[in-house]
Image 1 (cartoon, protein in one colour):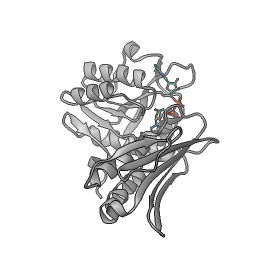
Image 2 (cartoon, rainbow, N blue to C red):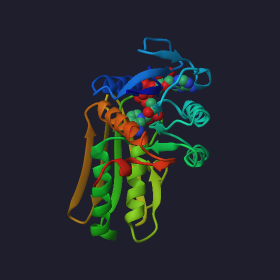
Image 3 (spheres, helix red, strand yellow):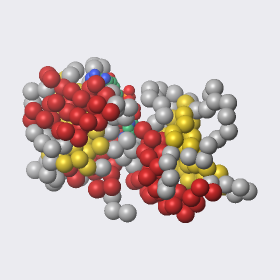
Length: 252
Ligand SMILES: NC(=O)c1ccc[n+]([C@@H]2O[C@H](COP(=O)([O-])OP(=O)(O)OC[C@H]3O[C@@H](n4cnc5c(N)ncnc54)[C@H](O)[C@@H]3O)[C@@H](O)[C@H]2O)c1
């Protein structure tokens, strides 16, 4: 029998991409419930907030804003349903709430749901281990002019990957405006560009003496993230309560 999917942020760019991904699937997951502040057309019951939802669903996928994501988390806890969260810009307290909820329901969280970026993370870790302190890592991310948070969640994931693979300490440095000193060895620079309709590009520069390595991922459309989230939802329906990430879904 088909499993009913609740989409939070249903009328947003990602919500619509999730809808397209579900519609292109094999019918095992179907859109059933939508939540969005905006009014619009949705193939199922549409609510303007999570606390109004009074129809059944089997799994939820959220691409909205942090406050709305937390409201969906409360709904999933109440209904004991698994939740995939793709919303970025969550604070420490919100991440702690996700972890706590994962003791009761399966929770999947990834700041980037694409297969390619998850491979990029592994490549960046390998490069960090091989290159060591001889190369300076700098991350540059580019996104469309509607993106609200900066730096991107993926840029932070890439920085964490470098941090984790390094032998020594790391310091994240955002921008470098108003910085009047030489680059320290432990720095990981993070820089954000915004413009046009670019779905998302992340480059990690390893800058050495007379040589450099650049590991770049380019997303052509938001569909790559939506497909990943739908895959994660199917995976989560088979899982016990716990905190899951893309690493659990993708074998590398
Ligand atoms: N994890 C990933 O792979 C990935 C990929 C792309 C985007 N994102 C993130 O997903 C989120 C959404 O991105 P988007 O491009 O679809 O944004 P968007 O602005 O197009 O869509 C967000 C939708 O959420 C709705 N919304 C906002 N607050 C709400 C509330 N309180 N209650 C109900 N609905 C509410 C808005 O009306 C809007 O339709 C962002 O945080 C973005 O960074 C994550």
